[in-house]
Length: 297
Image 1 (tube, rainbow, N blue to C red):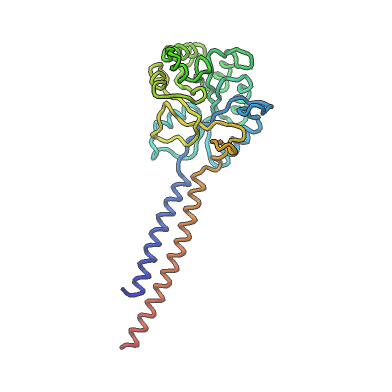
Image 2 (tube, rainbow, N blue to C red):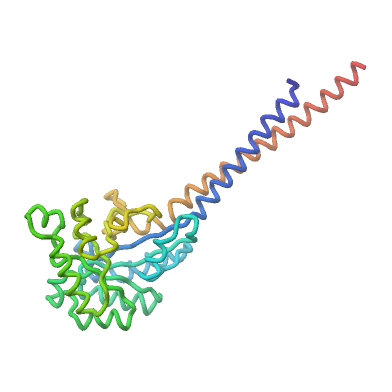
């Protein structure tokens, strides 16, 4: 094989690789993202590692919005789940709150007032109206005036796996709690968040039988089209989560896919320059071959 042909082959191969890498990187940067954020107590005190100050919560929301995320309503979230990955577009997130702490009500109102964000709150039936927890009038106000979606966090704040281990009728407990909460707030309750994030296959069967359709863990991560609807990822805020090696909402602003995609695009550009260099070498080699051929005539 002539040197010019060999150089051309290398240049063409590198060019194809650079095009492929660019496409892959661009796809990573533009890949759709669907996040569910989970918060607990919104308080001026951060003694509890679940507690978050309102300013910190606002900062997380602003970072996500800055990086082209769009806050969607819980109903829009449900519609998003019905789409396959090719139909999804852009970066989206929902905001949820667990336990029904009274101070979280102010945060839900602030998010709606300042950012136009509709939240979901997961309530513990037995704690409604207890000290430091929302009473029914507060819950109704959030639902009717701040577009807050009501979900269930259990009749009591106990792991579902523990309820099963104690040989209690989990299905009956969930069904009763769901129906009572639904009547109290005048809304069909179909969302559930696992207390302490604990569940298993038997517990998920009980949820289905009880009429619950979506359930959330606290493992963090992007929600994909093939995720189990009774084990959907949520990113729970915990103070100093990064230092503890745990999922953190701020780690997604910018998203991981952007960082990976940017590296891949950069690699594609470098490979493209290498390809150009080999094309120039091939051109020089052809000129030399032509001169050599002319000298031999």
